[in-house]
Image 1 (spheres, rainbow, N blue to C red):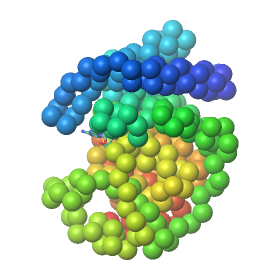
Image 2: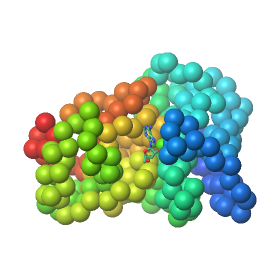
Image 3: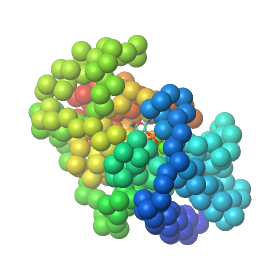
Image 4: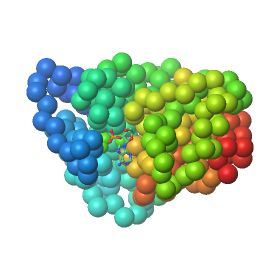
Length: 262
Ligand code: 2AM
Ligand code: CA
Ligand code: CA
Ligand code: CA
């Protein structure tokens, strides 16, 4: 039997340690490279933070698998067994340009089911976490169960990629949603936006393309807070591929899917 309580305590310790290393890095020059395009950045701290978790996981849990954004983990092709899905720095552009608005994100899945989720806002010292069936917390204070929010009172997280014409989606639908809600925000970190949905700072988050590591931790946290996370048509996310994502407070999910996205 997996001792999830022990793993939970261990992960929280590692996350605090990784956060200290990232904060300390603000005093040193960063090495910044581009990946798929000039705006797709990776720094030495993305790689070193991923390395930190991988080394610790391999030492303590050698039979677990690791799917990490920077590719230093395993070549994960299935969710059988225990799989750690890790984004060492979510919001790398913010990390580089703002030294804030980024997070460490970790989701731990067992045979495809989310068990433990973590999002750590390193600069603000806010650690969101959740355990399946037991609830969600921010700095160990339980998050209140989310209450239904109507569209006209909703603040939604949405990125400017929706403004640009794209082959995935007819953006007129999003324009009418943006007109009907109370406000829109764009934080540049999928993980933080999911943490904000879980804590009620945002009522919803909509994105065209998220990788598994962007959402693995946040999905568990939002669901434990009483919210919903799905693709744009309301179906289950696939944690091995890129997904369009809609995360919502209750009430809002059906309304956005039926009245705006269909
Ligand atoms: P990152 O900072 O870990 O790359 C806004 O940029 C959000 O989208 C961030 O959470 C960012 O994660 C993520 N993101 C950036 N490029 C992406 C891509 N090509 N596919 C999916 N998500 C991406
Ligand atoms: Ca990235
Ligand atoms: Ca990410
Ligand atoms: Ca990242």
